[in-house]
Structure formats: structure tokens, C-alpha cells
Image (cartoon, rainbow, N blue to C red; front, side, top):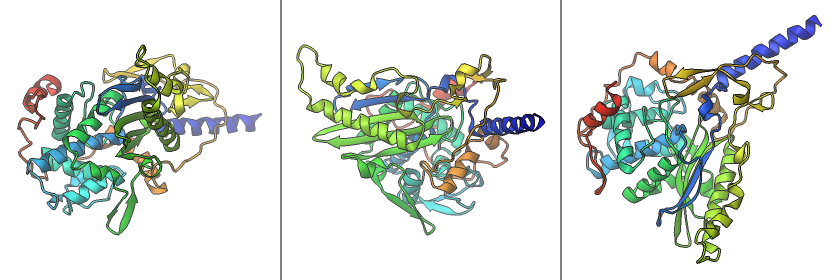
Amino acid sequence: MKQHTWGLAIRTLAVAAMLFVTGLSAPAAFAEKYASIVIDKDTHEVLHARNADDPRYPASLTKVMTLYMLFDAINAGDVSLDEKLPISRFAASQAPSNLKLKPGSTISVSDAIGALVTKSANDVAVVVAERLGGSESRFAQLMTVKGKSLGMQNTRFVNASGLPDDRQITTARDLAILAEAMIDDHGESYHYFSRPRFTWAGKTYKNHNELLDSVDGVDGIKTGYTRASGFNLMTSAKRDGHRIIAIMLGGSTSKSRNAHVEALVEAAFKSYELPADPADPGRRIAMAFSEFNTTTANPNGAAVPMLNGKPLGALQPTTTTLRGLTSVPKAPEAKVEEVEVAVEEDEETAEDASEILMADVGPAADESMEFEQGDATPTSFVGATVVIPAGRPAFTVGEYEARQFGN
């Protein structure tokens, strides 16, 4: 009996440690992480949407906005592809996934693009942010302003990489708007997102977007993952004269996410083949996406935190406030059964998977660092009106700061 009690105590401590490391005490509002939307890019028709306006964490899909801003600067003549970007101490300190850049060294803009698209390097994201905004925090404000101008009304950026921060939120619909803007406003640069691999310092990195090789018509655009977000994918495909954009957030594994997005893409193109019903124009779309419109507890492999076979939220009656945004459940005092923990090499290599664990420690680790962000020379982006396509409302960074970042 004593031996059984001792064994249970050890297992209890082990599971408690696992809950801390894996972040299963994530905010209750994000316990259901799944969200998706599919749109016809040419007609702007929404073919499918589920939880499309609910707040979610973008993870590395953030880097699509970072690249959008970089392409803006290139088109404006502020930056050239062969320009060497300096690596500050702060940039070099970023948690993996990264290129392990050294302070004082440089990386070309062309290589920075490749690193962001394929390796999803967090240190490179900060290098770009410092070059364009003077500091990452100010660049994040510029990103938010740009997003608002594009129509991303429910998105706020606080960093350029997508590393965990509970203040950095978006929606599937907003990300679809971003994907559409990338294709429309930077079509000449969109080809970067189909780049199969990137080589740096003698090491080659494969693009994480496996749909590029396996799904007809898919030609971009980016994957993302943190524990808080689950496995995310922003993709676009063109087939038979139609281009669609599909967003999925909150997959439990990269494999289930990829399979689900592939199914969404195929359903979209199937909808174009079905006969139209003049009396019911939406019927063909409803038929094509019928399998995705039923309500289930765990839709399509979405990452719902579980403990002892039950959704974690169901076991947690009390909450505490987190920065006024959502609530954080307290750990339940319940009998802990033996739990087997499996490590899966999903989107990253084994090395990168262990690095992601460190990255998910969160903002507290970043806040303890004493690095300064002012090592890079700012461009005309600093203090200027953000470049906004014609027909979209323009406002200055100062005006946005006064409204959103003044408190």
C-alpha cells in the first residue's frame, strides 16, 4: 500500500510537471483552438467558415505580415534584395526556431526572405523588424496599423515572429484577408512562398508546407505552430481558373492539419463542379462542404487540451484574469492516473521540436533579457504614415499609438 501511494505521488508530480511544460493550463477561451475559413479569392465569396471570427493565436503566420511589410519596403525602394541586414544582440537572442545568427554579423534581405518562408526563423523576423521599424515593438505597432488598413479589424501584433504572447491575437477571417492582400499587393513576390528549401551556413531547411508537394494547385503560403495555437496553416491554391484561400487554426498535429486543409481545398474545387441551382445558389457550396458543417466535440483533429480523457476546461471550475483578455483555469485537484507521454516529430525536426519547448516558456523569458533593440538603423517607416493601398483608410502610427498603445 505504501509503495502504491509513493508511486502515485511520483506520477502526480510527473503529470504536474508535464502540464506546466506543455501549457495545458492555457486560457479557457482558447481550449477549443479550431477555426477555419475558405474563400474564393476572385469573388470574395466565403465558401466555408467555422469559428472564423473567434480570437486565436497566429503563431508563425505572423511572419506573413512581417514579409508583407518587407515587400512594401522593397517596392518603395527603401530596401534592396542584396542589402545586408545587421544582427543585433536582441535579434540573436530570440528563441528557436532560428538560424542561430551571431550579433555583429549580417544577413541579406534575399536570405532573410528564404529563412522566414522555410525555416520560420524568429531571429530573422526581429532582424527585419529592427531594420524597418527601429525596434521590434515599434514594428509590431506598424504591423497592427497595416493590418487594420487591410481590414484585419480583430488582429493585434506585439512581435514580428509569432512567439507566444497572449496579447497577440487574430482570427481566421483576418488571416484570409492577409493572404488575399499578399497575393493582390505583392503578387510579384508571392512565388517565395512556394520555395521548397533554403540553405544557410551549409545547412538546408525544407519548407514545412507539405501541401506544396501533395495537393494539386497549392502554391503557398505558410505554416505555424505553438502550443497555445496548435498547428496552423494558411494556404492558397489555383486550379481550373479558380483561386481559393484556406485557413485552418488549431490542429492537434501537423498531419491532421494537413489532411484537413487538403480536404477543405478539395471541397472548394468540388463546389465549382457541382450543378448550380438557380432557386438555391448556395446549395452547391453547402453540398461540397457538408461534411465540415456538423458540430462535434473535437472537430477534424483540433487541439483540445485533455486530461484523463476529458476536456481540460470541464475539470476546471475556477478562473483568474489574464491581462483583461481572457481567463486562465486553475489546475484541478483530481485523482491523477498514469499518463503516457508521446513525443511526435510533427512540423519540425527533432532538434527544432525541443527548441519549440523552450520558445513556449513565453513572454516572461523575453522580458527578463537586458538586450537593447536599437542596434539597427531605422528606415523612413519610423514615424511615417504607413504605406496603404489606394482606397483604404490611412492613419499615422502616432494616431494609432494614441488610441491603442497609450495606456
